[in-house]
Image (cartoon, rainbow, N blue to C red; front, side, top):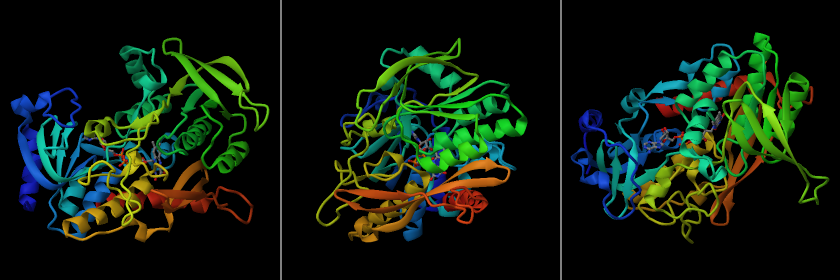
Amino acid sequence: MNISRRDLFKFAGISAAAAAVSGCTATTGAAPVADLNTANKMLGRHQVVIIGGGFGGLTVAKELKKIDPKFDVAIIEKNDSFMSCPFSNCNLGGIEGVNLSTLTHDYSQAIEANGYGMLTASVTGINRAAKIVYTSKGSVGYDILVMAPGIDYNYKGQFPTWDAAKIAKARRLTPAALVPGGEHIALDRMVKNMEDGDVVITVPAGKYRCPPAPFERASMIANFMKKEGIKGKVIILNETAEVAKGAAFKESWKELNAGVVEHNDNCKIVDVDFDKKVITYVQTVFANKDDTVGVATTKTQKYGIFNFIPHNMSNPVIEMSGVATTPDGFKKVKMATSAEKPVSFQTATDVNVYAVGDVVGHAIPPSGQSAIWSGKECAKEIAYVLHGKSYSVASALPYKSANVCYSMVNGNPEEAIMVNHEFMVAGPVIGSKGSVPKGDTVNDKFRSTGLGKATRDWYKGAMRDLFS
Ligand SMILES: Cc1cc2nc3c(=O)[nH]c(=O)nc-3n(C[C@H](O)[C@H](O)[C@H](O)COP(=O)(O)OP(=O)(O)OC[C@H]3O[C@@H](n4cnc5c(N)ncnc54)[C@H](O)[C@@H]3O)c2cc1C
């Protein structure tokens, strides 16, 4: 089963030359239609195949090779370069020395440093019975599969009456920029070329990637507008009343961005006229905590730039695998639990299939730092299995500061806020408890320049973790 370093690179070479098969085939048992095409020939078989070269997938691959260099590990990733979502708001904010290339990394550096293989291709189907992953460039066999494909947007679930053309327009004209790739470039172009006018950011209900991200984005775009002398507001239409790191963000908006950042609770988007640049939404105002009905008013909002963040869901790769998911709109992967291993990154459905990153059904924040922590633990579980032993993630818990997440709120001076999560066993899943400390205890403020520096240091450290 083990193959040499030379073969690992050959694997990448073969894939690059292979012809592409278009379309997306959901397969859990029978061979998909694409498999009949000669282009979907068998490219190789590996001990561990990881879908997704993001925060979770890169960590699992690196850790496995660290634990045992003889492990035969290959990643399947659709993009040919990596773009970081973390720190991307600092790019929008015009933070000194940060640009799109700060966020972009080539995979060859990580492959060279860690010795795993990588196939640049899109996963189009999974046959768990035959232990095969189908891709746009051919099929790949596995002994153990790790799914780390991140999130997708659920426009269809949120707006059932919208047709494909309207959803395509939403993706193109009002990029959500929550997934790595071109959307960050599009939003960067819009912000960097903006004229006087309002920027609107929506915050979805339900589980979504990096809960503080839309609020950090509001602070950073406001920072950019201040720096460039652009007149207008950053208006947040939040579908709920929840604000991650709420007291800390609200303190900074009041003191740094008064009259510019405007946060609105309980705003449900009803429709968007992308030609006229008008959002229609219903805002519900509740009299008090016991009022569950409230008073709903339909309103409209014009925008110059719209960062339209819709409901999130697990990437379709999860559905392709056919593993059990939670019945909510997000469809989190149900994780295995047993007396011996109360919490795990193994899926509840298939002992040979694991999941890490934002798709997991654990009660932990969907963040890059959580994905790195989870990736390390998942690699340990798999390494023990491959060595014929057993490892319980519960033995690592409780774990203090498993997720530390910074948000830049000011550019001059650079100031940030933070949240710190401890992870613990919480019944059949990993749970978490967060706290938002004051960064500047002398002046009794959440934000501080020390946390501003820590934001830069965290990003550098995370990129070092993934790429060296
Ligand atoms: C604006 C913003 C700011 C953020 N800031 C922070 C922060 O400060 N700190 C922090 O910890 N987290 C932050 N996050 C969250 C972090 O980006 C995610 O939680 C993290 O990326 C999740 O890792 P993942 O491995 O699950 O998914 P990803 O990192 O998205 O990786 C998934 C990979 O799978 C690939 N893929 C998807 N489908 C397929 C397919 N069909 N075939 C092949 N490959 C596929 C994708 O191309 C991608 O490379 C931020 C997110 C955003 C949007």
